[in-house]
Length: 433
Image (cartoon, rainbow, N blue to C red; front, side):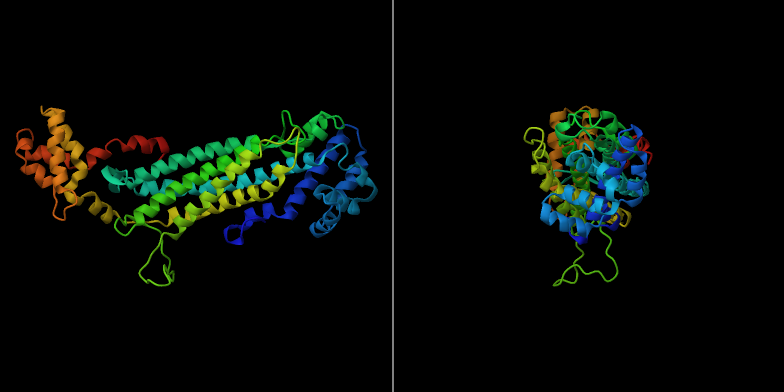
């Protein structure tokens, strides 16, 4: 497998072993034999014998490949060592890419199925946490600066909506990549009946490529990598947010810190967001592969193999890393430590400057011009800003111009965070939270 063991989960890793790859090759070869027998091109008895005897030894295939310098020929040679005379019907009229590309589709579909399973786990984790924190009030931030109140559940709802869009894209992608080709050299069907392709793909759960050359066009594979990179980018967004919220001077959420875990070899107090940082780094790797995937689209004429060496690394890496990311972020979300009291403390810093717009609008509603109201409110807010004893609320209450328009009750209403949350149920209902 291509990715280091540290980030390879067993169920995905086994899909990208040499043994599994050769297994899919054999699936394709047998499906073609069955199709050809169904159409009367080869004896059905031969197919029965092939199915009974066909096998391979990955080590033996590598041994043969070292001599012949061709992986498919090495594989076929090894299979025929098991099958004997009936082996002459295997690979009849085919070119190597018929097997390679069709089998690759099987690997990609199987990998995507595992990714979708993990994605479902993440959806459920986000939905649960959003429900738990739908009323956990915190400050919303823009440009990294305090803006207006939101809830942590609302933030999670945005993540959930994004993951649901990713699921929708991946379900569509599964159909896009479920494509095989059994069209022979340069894709003209000169030596293989198009009906063989149709039947073979049907047996394998694939659709025939609309117009293959000697290979399936690599725009399909580029889309596959791009969609996984987009999913990884979403996970990275969540991870970066958690990292920011875990900063010591914010500390509104925190990654779970297990018993016996240590954060630093030098500083015993450290509790670092290592999982989120790991996810951020892995997303960079997956995103980097999108360039290689796009460059694989332009091949010489009907085919060359410049894409092959890239895909041997890029596709297993992308699938394995995406699968790992989803498990990691799901565990992170499930076990996330949330600190509502810290959220409340941060929201009210400098005497509730985040309620400045409510004061502005209240003054305008009472008859002050917007320009004058903005000046008055900004003056009070900036006097409170970045001062240890700064208190926007008190400054507003004491301001003579404000007092001409707003009474004490009017001012208190401006500082009620519930006003900002009154329409969040609309979003929760859209997402079934």
